[in-house]
Length: 92
Image 1 (cartoon, rainbow, N blue to C red):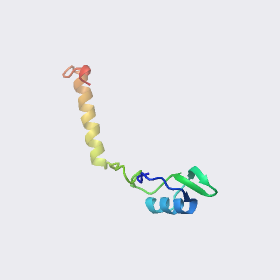
Image 2 (cartoon, one colour):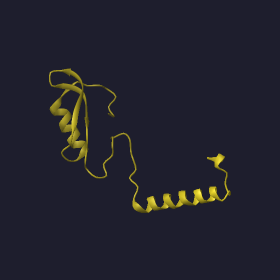
Image 3 (cartoon, rainbow, N blue to C red):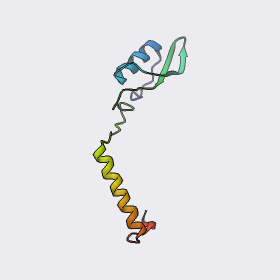
Image 4 (cartoon, helix red, strand yellow):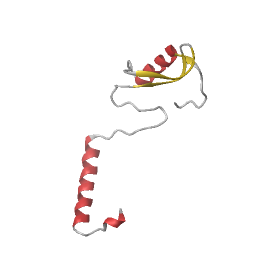
């Protein structure tokens, strides 16, 4: 969670917050760290919305197909150069 202050909240609040963050109804969920009847510190859930960040504070870039091909081609060229002895594997 991004908020460093821990708060004990009811499960409805956690479900609504997770749904809002996900942008659609969340899938499987588990409440974490019980702090009273129906109250918890956290929720662990699965968001099936496409191209959503895993966490609000951790920006995970989504690579498009052109990026994928560029990196695969670069990796293949590097491997070929290593096989041909143009670069030493110890440099890795």
